[in-house]
Amino acid sequence: MFFIVVLLWTTNIALQAKDDFESFRIISYNLENLFDCVDDSLTSDESFTPTGDHEWTEAKFWVKINNLSRAITAAGEWQTPILIGLCEVENAKVVSDLLYHTQLREVGYQFVHKDSPDLRGVDVALVYHPQRFHLIAEEFIPVHITDGKPTRDILHATGILTNGDTLHVFVNHWPSRYGGELESEEKRMSAASTLRDATDALFAKNARSKIIIMGDFNDYPDNNSLIHGLCAFSPQKSYIFDQLYNLSYPIHEKGDIGSHKFGGKWGMLDQFIVSGALLDSEASCFVQQDGMKICQEKFLLKESATGYAPKRAFLGTLFAYGYSDHLPIYIDLTIKNKK
Image 1 (cartoon, one colour):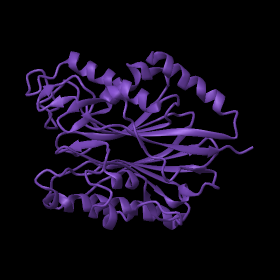
Image 2 (cartoon, helix red, strand yellow):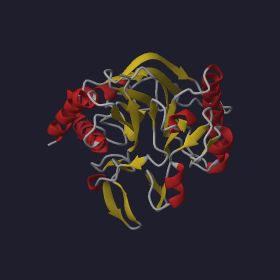
Image 3 (spheres, helix red, strand yellow):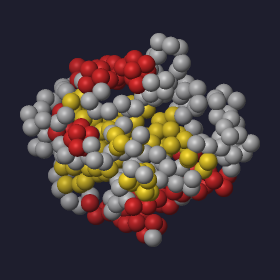
């Protein structure tokens, strides 16, 4: 079944290219501790080995890998996602296994990754379809934390779309709330200001820069780091090209669903943020203000005492044979092809 869906994805590329408009799906997904089984002497990953606390084996690893590819396929629906932002991947090997040793191998994806200074060794990565997003530049922006503990870099990739437009993509995994929300807030504020500096540099060169920011921010859309640090606001009917708008905000305000569940409450830790230029429906590419969605396929959820929750991969150190403690989120980018 999934092979058929992936085959339809690839066929869809040729069919869509004939139209004046194309719809390109973009996914963001926290994979919940996608580690291999090998001890890396440079990171604190000992728990994810056969003799570690998680008793992490090749057999369990491949169950998780195939589960994640199924989730990505479901989030794509009948489209071939052109971009997939990944959080909590240990290294290039696990990304390679996900893309080239599951049903996703039929798509022909490529990816950008670099080992980050994170002590546990968890990184971000960007998966892209080279026929639809021609990568021309990549950089990994360090986030400096005052307490000296390193965190994940912010990945900035620049690519050319099929209509010739330049698209800037940022993949984020901001510092966690470990130790308390307020106690750790300064770390996420540092990540926010680092990202804001990067986007301001792009706006200084071109006020109509097309920017998509995604990832796990470990804060909600109305927290200080997003509002005051990054200055990303709820989408408005009247928008400014060189400002940032958080497409996750409307879902967050409803509060009845989210990408992650903690303490029995849904929350939007995973978000899509875009520049105002991408809200212009008359432009050569754009997104809908209410276009961010959460993949809520039944197989990704399980019943809990507080209703449904993500069917996570781990319960403590026990492998639960699930997917992730986050749900995939996605947006569709509409492209106007030049004649």
